[in-house]
Structure formats: C-alpha cells, structure tokens
Image (cartoon, rainbow, N blue to C red; front, top):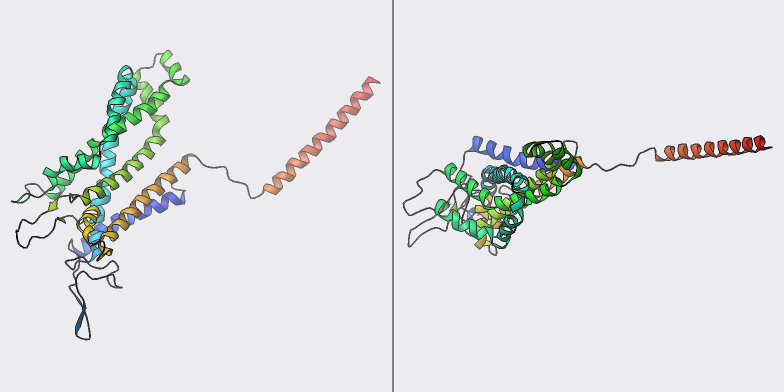
Length: 338
C-alpha cells in the first residue's frame, strides 16, 4: 500500500491539512487575522468582503477574517469528524452484519427488505431534525461544550446509516457463507463464530477497507448538506437580536459551516463559499486516491518486463530446439522400423 504513489498522494494531502491545522492554532491561536479595508494613496479602494489578494489568497469574509486562516483552523474538526463518524459506523455495522448473515440467516430476507426502505428517506433531512436540538444555539446559550456537541453529533450520524451498512455487509458475507470451503468447515464442526473470524472476515477485509473510505466520502457530503441547512459541526452560533442580529455562524470554522454560512454570497463574493467547497472537494479526492491506491496494492497488475525482446528470443530458440529434436526423433523412429 505504501508503495502506491496514488495512495501516498491522498494520504499526504490529508496529513498536511491536519498537521497544518494543529500547527497554525499552536502558533497563531484560534482566531484568524483580520483586514477591514485596503487603502491606496490615502484612499479606501476596497472594503469588506475583500477579494483574493497576494497576502490573502482566498480573500476575507464579510467580517474581515482571513478565509485561508479559517479554512486551516477548521480542517482538523472537519477531517477528524468525518474519519470518526465513518470509523464508528463501521465498528458497529461489521459485527451486526456478520451476525445477520450467520446467526439470523432465516430472518435476513425480511430484515434486509425492511432496512432497504431507508434508502428512500433523505438522510440529510433526517439528520437535521435529530441534530437541531443539539447544534442549534438556544436563546440563553449552549449548556454543553463544543467538543461534547461534536461527540454527540458523531455518534448520531454514525447510527443514522449504520443499518444500511450492516445489511450491505450481511449480503456480502452471505454470499461467502455458501462457498465450498465454508461448507467444508461447517461439516468438520466449526462454530459460527469461528467461521466469521477465520473465513468471512479475512475474505472481506479488503472490501471493508474500501467501504470505510466510501463512508468517509459520504460523511463529507452529508456535512456539506447540513451546512446548507445552517446546522454546523460543533454548533451553530445564532444571534437573537431583533434589529441587528447576525446570520447563523460556525463556531469551529469547520468547512461545511463556512460553506453554509456564506452560500448567500455566491454571486456577490463567490470566493467565500467556493473556498470551503474547494477544500472539501480536495479532501474527497484525497480519500478516493487512498481507496484506489489500496485496491491497486491488493490487486497488482502484471507489468510488462523491460527485457521482453530477450524473452521472445529465448522462446523462439526453445521452439527451434524442440523442432530439431522432434526431427531427430522421427528420423530415429524410421530407422528402427526399417
């Protein structure tokens, strides 16, 4: 896996994002730099939000905060949350899927049919209604900490699609359960747990790794959808001032929150929402690279040898030697007959 360049590229991008996020906060703090206007020759030539400049590659937001600084600070929250949600989902779904395909085989058909109906329910809207009491700031402020709200959101989002992932794993393992080597193991007296541990899980390990990467990508997408609905990771800061209230804002500067809180500026200041979309897309692409690199490492293609011409000459020489020996053998056979 570590010999695949495409895997190393994807892993390096995510690692740079995470390391840069922690390093930036450790060096500069958790508040990005601010710029309110640009002056030239004593005159104000540009106000908020400031478009991308050399010193501010992604411009500033409507409050003058550097967009690049906000992206760097929010990288750790976005990436770690996506990885944790997918990991918790897989940790719960894998044993449930194996139990469904082995211990509950008689009931697998109707259970799978019942859970498959969840495909027709918009998971984003379902997550919105479940998470809004946790993430939407009440009028008297949050009673929980930011990391506590992030943990609650991770658990809830992991359980939302866990049944679907469990059924997917159960269907795949049910196909393996009918293989001849599993049947032979059952005939020899192997228990169901041993079959799962010794046969099903080793055969599905590669598919489970790919499925985990797909779940990470799906989590990024769901977080972006929740951002459009103004429900941000770690909580949505809401102003209840009836006259001068600010729009909902992200507390943690996570990318989905930056995207949702600035979407209304798409026409006037497109760099505000598109900056977070760019980094979400890069992260999804990085995970896709890692999945592709992992698959290639497990299924290496036979490469053409650099000395193919030399091999062809050896094969031709062997054919010539075989032909000569066959001629001699035929001649000796004719001599014996005479």
